[in-house]
Amino acid sequence: MTPATHSLDPARLPEIAAGTDRSGTLNNVLAIAGIVIKEMYRRKDFYVLFVLTALITLLMGSVTFFNQENIVRYLKEICLFLIWAASLVITITTAARQIPAEREQRTLFPLLAKPVTRNQLVIGKFLGCWFASGISLLLFYLFFGAVAGAKEHEWPVLNYFQAAVLHWFMLGIVCALTMLGSVVFDAPSSTNTIMLIVSVGILLVGRHLNKVALKMEEPGQTIVYAIYFVLPHLELFDVRDLIVHNWGLIPWHIWAAGLAYAAVYSAIFLALACLMFRRKAIN
Amino acid sequence: MRAYLLSIFLLLMVGFSLATTLEPWFQSWAGSRAQSENVLQVALGDSRRMFARHFFTKADAYFHNGYYPSIYDSKEGEKQERSAVKGAHEHEGHSAEECEESYLGAPKDWIDRFSRHFFASQHTHLGESDCGHDCCKKSKEGKGHDETCEHKGHEAGHHHDQEDGHDHAEAAKAGQEREILPWLRLSAEMDPQRVESYVIAAFWLRSKLGKVDEAEQFLREGLRANPGDCEIQYALGVICYEDRKDIVRARNLLELSMNRWREQESRKPEPNILLLGQILNQLAKLEREQKNYPRALECYTLLKQISPNKEAVQNWIDEMKTNLPPSAVASPR
Image (cartoon, one colour):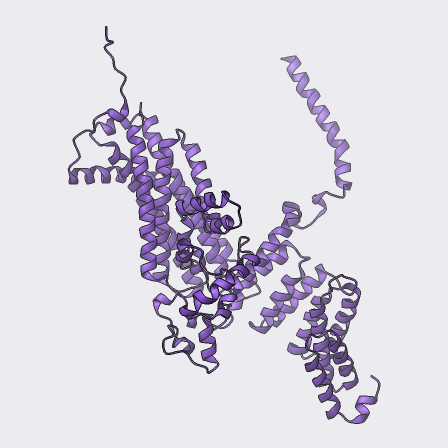
């Protein structure tokens, strides 16, 4: 006799039909994103990092060197470094815990039974994390602008706008990559660690991989050069030097191309995350 | 229970006995950091020298407005690029000479080309009022831009178009060299034996920022950390001569620095000849102004021996000899 129970292959489960019309999809995605943003308000991570950044910056700003007023570049550099570090930590830790937390707290089943599709859940979580990081980034850059303006008596608003938006789009790539990581790895702690190492690694050596490759023998040269072309160049979005040393604006079409580059990579990682989550057994 | 308590008591006794034995030895141990009064020395040990070098390099990077090679940008790679650069850049408003100054060389791929819009990729200096374009420098010298040159008009010192990527008016501000000072101060704090930190900071303080007192104070701080250092003594001598107009002290300091140079540098396999040249030149200038011509001639003669530009020094000597009364040349010092 055939047993009464069948093992369910999650990949063969039919997508729930509801929520597939355009407005329904958008509503579901935005509702999930809203929950993630509210979660960020409630958690202390952002507040702690913001206060720490502000304290260190103000402390460093109070130091006087050789009775010389208006020395500001070192302060801008320190403040921007802290903002970058804090934003990476906030984004990665927020994105890494979303899906594992839903699974651990067993809120994933009622959420998917709403009905919300798995794709909507992943996209909603991504948008929530990305918007949350954007809100935190806005506050960080407002603080930076206030400190730099107070010392320098200048407000290059457009330069700050370019830098902040590039930074935000870079966090979009990191966020999508972390969502993918959170689907692949089970524990948020391992996702956090791996994504921090990968992001910092790309930021530090991404720009120089081609030079390293050119000094290598074959087949190492081809392999490293291939990695150079494939990996997302997060360092492109790090325009801190231009801000610190008061360089001019990035040409707008180049800036827009940079944003498009980030959007493409975010979409690739998000699509991979959706694909893997659809195939993943959630029980 | 009693056995546990006795074991703990026994361990405490052993720990106490070991502490009484080891503590006197640790206090007299030559490698103990606790003997140092400097908090940084205690906390970082010899690694502070590494940080000092990093901060010193940071100051240099700031002087170049963030345009600075990384450890991946080697000189060999730069040379290899030059031949390719020559042809590729001439159509972009840069001459081959301008490109040769660049450690970046020609872009290696499209990502490299694209990424150069997102970091400081032009060679400029703090306080310079130009953009680094070779054509703009020539234009300032009166040679003018070509009609088709995309940088035409830059020499006037106006704001560039927003797409241009740099700002003349900003760079033209006076005293921007102040921005390197925090890093030099930190470098000196981390490694008080790094003489360059004191000398370079003092140079910018007195020459561009008009902070002679602060420069002298910083140099004296350096002299306390490096007693008898000839480079610091020379820098102090220059301050006394050029800023304080205290000729006697300046002469003493310059003579002292020359003697110290002979003691410290002449034994080295690669002595700092440039420093000796600077000392001799400054001393000769001072003595010439004070009409002590024989001593000035002596200094110029010594300078001629080490100078790469011997002809120019000989011209100064000849000029001095022709303009002097015969008694001045012949008389001993």
